[in-house]
Length: 167
Ligand code: FEO
Image (cartoon, rainbow, N blue to C red; front, side, top):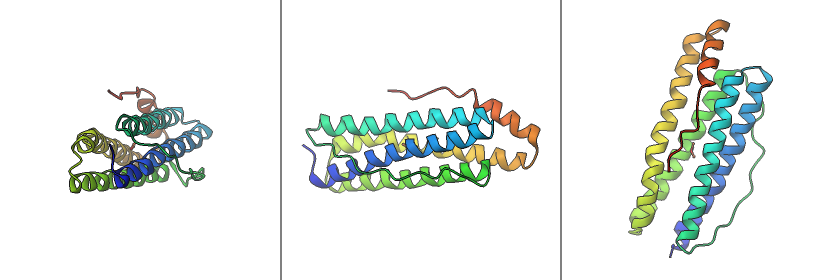
């Protein structure tokens, strides 16, 4: 059985992950409108991953005999100043997600909730990967600068992303 405080924290996280999925689809649409279909694809896959994260938490609450309660999702940001601006927003979002996961981890540790600690380990590792990926694209965008050919090459590379989520 989940404690009330852990259940509330995970329910907030479920909504947060769905909100991330929503926000990344808005970024995908932004890149589609710029004909940067590789970036658009990358964000679509990212959006799908966020939905899978939400479902992982969703299933966990149910597995522990808890009650899932979803919150509202705000309208996401639809316009960005540049591809770099969009990626920087994505990275800032990932950093907030990391902080939220660490806060649940700390709470679970305080309460000696070992199953929650174990479940969260996958997310702790996943966040390292997610931040690294966003940081790498930001570095590449900075290198490319205003070089259109470089941007198109980066777009082609991002088009190759597959959904790498593992169970
Ligand atoms: Fe579900 Fe990108 O954190």
